[in-house]
Amino acid sequence: MQDENQNIEYKRIWSDEYLKWVCGFANAQGGRIFIGVDDDKTIYGLQDAHRQMEDIPNKIVALLGIVVDVNIHQKDGLDYMEVIVSPSNVPISYKGVFYYRSGATKQELKGPALQQFILKKMGRSWDEIVCEGATLEHIDDEAVAYFVRKGIKAGRLPENAADDSTETILRNLDLMDEDGGLRNAAILLFGKRPSRFFACVEFKIGRFRTDSDLRNQDMITGNLIQMADKVMEVLDNKYLIRPIHYEGLQRIEPLEIPEDALREIIFNAIIHKEYPGYSIQMRVYNDRIWLWNSGGLPEGITFEQFMGAHSSCPRNRLIARAFYLAGFIESWGRGINKIKTEFIENALEAPIYKEEMGGMSVYITRKKGLFGENDTVNDGVKNTDNKCVSEKNDGANDSLRDGVNDGVKWTKNELAILHEMSKNNDITYIQLQTKLKISEPTVRRSIKRLRLSMMIVREGSDKSGHWYVTEKGKELLY
Image: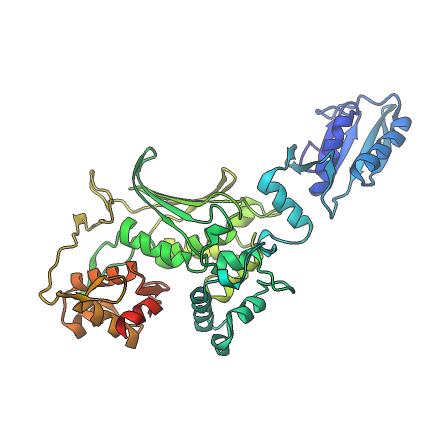
């Protein structure tokens, strides 16, 4: 006989309490319960095995609504019983409570875990459910347009998709049902304010000296399709370092963590998060970064398989499909290996993944020497090259004039940069310096102001991305 495991349980005598175990097996992968056998696999036998062979199946049918196979075995003149439970394709409850076999334990399913379980048994994911009360008025057309631009650029959407209406795009993504109801994924991906419908959809970032010493924090809200860009921008501006080095005469300032790999890590947290569930959390320390999202590994995938090549098993299928069509992710379960490879190629320790606290954690080790003993990042000012960079005005041409957005005043340099980006969205910092004859700090300060005011957004990484002038920015120009 095998030891107790996911599919085997030993009981010395029968008790109706064990109907919970039958329920748990039926809701999981099925299993066998041996009656008359102790945990150490010692056979004690049953005095009335043949009577119980009739009573137990009848109780299971009456209280659980499932049919099991029951066999009588004999060893050394002792009878023992084998109850064979097949996995059920519908949820099974015992007296209104749902149980699930996990490892060698019986788990009572509650809250989000129960909801996810029932949806899975129905062959659906949470993001497919229709969001009650949501209409096209709650969809941000600019977020949909952003998705289309990214998808066309990635070659995963046809160029004529840019001419489609928001409703057509949502229907093509299966984000609307036959009656026009918006699914949860539609609001999460493209909603003007997803938090109106769902709690804990934000991305929380905190700067910590120690676990109990929080220095500053940010909360990224809004739709999921643009969330990674916003997170990367906040991390770049306030939390992470761009160490300076030179290649010949060219000044190089790569982000301390490979940008494409970091973006992939953030995409994974957003896509695989358990919705509803707790907020995604990122803690930035001097020596490490910790990122956590609610929701563990997909059922049927071990941690060893997860760390190697495995099939793609997204928890939120519609959200994952939208991210794939936008060119953000692949659909082959290769993300972990790609991240690991990019870290190693940049002489960094590969991230460490752990399934813990009801979710997935990623631990990223930061390079040593980025900070002095008393250095930290606080209040939007960060260290580069172990020297504090201030926002000091250094340009005689930095005079101000009125803009059209809420009375904000914009410098001539900022307006000139905005104008150049509207003509060439691939323009670089160095090209702006040369063309406008202004210093590097002025270019960086001006772009930072424009980005924080959402006049421009950076789509993609610093290496392969480009600038996009928003409608708000266009109003300022024209």
